[in-house]
Image (cartoon, rainbow, N blue to C red; front, side, top):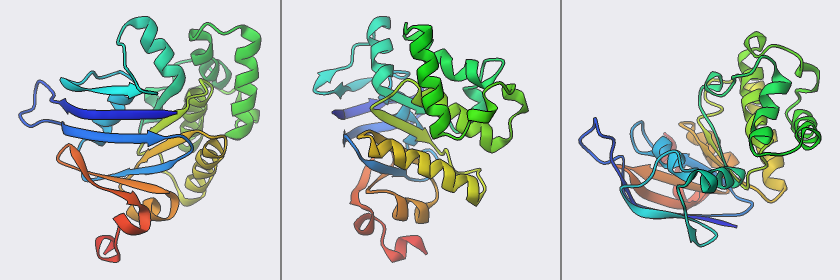
Length: 233
């Protein structure tokens, strides 16, 4: 599968400069992509365009060569393929307990109770949440909330997973666990796009780095080529 951004322009109404300025990018299946750049460079805005939360002022987003349709039905189908995990997991945890929260997405897709349960059990095993399914979401630790929010998106079985600074507030042990989950998702032929300010992490984890500056792609390519030793100092 392929997710493409072609000459995207977008500006928030309360800001002067464009958040995205003639941005073009193509994402392929089974990629580990690190999205880097300073605050305000457009990383989060790009992710919000990927699953249709934001719509470009000009340019277009394409999934498998087909321009996105922003009707309700089309957006529901899009979010089967493109998932987004926010930086703050509490922005995505709405239900009384972990099981209910993870099952919310599959049920909203119209799946049966049995299929929703199957997906919950599968991603709970992947995210090490099997013993926490009945726990209230408010009683989870920070790392557990991150994994629960991630599991809720993975239960939709997206081909493209965008994670907005998912690892930035985690301790080293939880960061390793979350990266293992993301790696396992890529091994299934899916693509993970991880936004991060940790360039050392980007260099060691990603197959490809996309560096944004001023709302456009500044550099992209294999990690060892995009991030030089001088960049890391």
